[in-house]
Length: 184
Figure 1 (cartoon, rainbow, N blue to C red):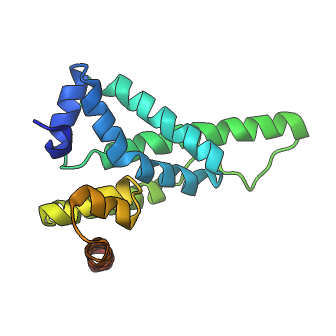
Figure 2: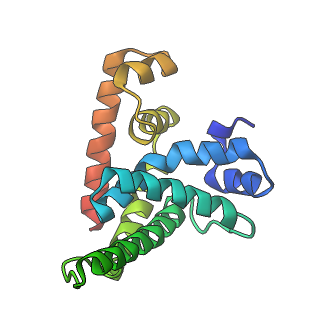
């Protein structure tokens, strides 16, 4: 079965058995959302890239025995990302304290637990909404949002017109915004 058509649970199971292509499919599917979670927590692009990479390295090590509780691996990856980012924040604070000899009270020790719950619920809502989309809309979402394709590149990949991708993505974004607002 093609890695792009397998569920996250199937990809995780295959990756846990050592299938690097399955893990690459998970990486491609979720590296951008994980990066943006890290960027939101750290506020620095370079550190966010490092945290995203470390998140996937940690995920690779933790695959064995993982049982995915939902349809998406994003909540699990987001949790790993938040822990990695929290460790980075603590290390940054320790380094600043050592260099300055003072404590910077503006830099938090840990990631806000309430925000973690909100982020996890939001990721789950988005994953549910994406799972309910048509196969074409899911693919447009994956290409443009998750993998960062430009409209024309996604259109070429799907064999459709540029305008079709643009219109579908506009409807997808509206649908996701509505779903997030309804459940909030």
